[in-house]
Length: 84
Image 1 (spheres, rainbow, N blue to C red):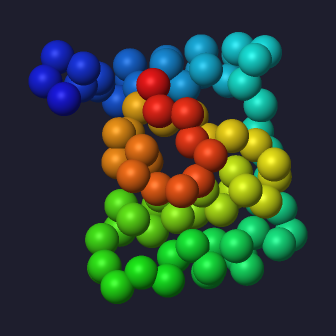
Image 2: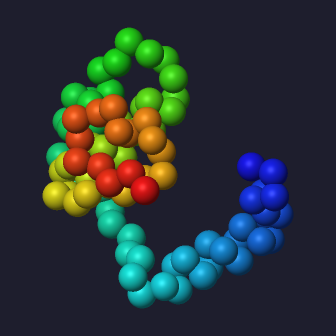
């Protein structure tokens, strides 16, 4: 984190810039997301990070979108993820 940490005001300013960008859109949760999320989150680990990853993968799968991430942990999975 270090020098990348921002104040709350800076974070809100960044958020406003992101939402003003016409290339970014909000997608509501699809109706059948829960079934896919349950399937992808049946893990023995209690890590909240793995639950969040399962949610993102499920959302992408149900909507037919490709997940793009900086998280290299996605490289070990079988999902269609573009890791930058």
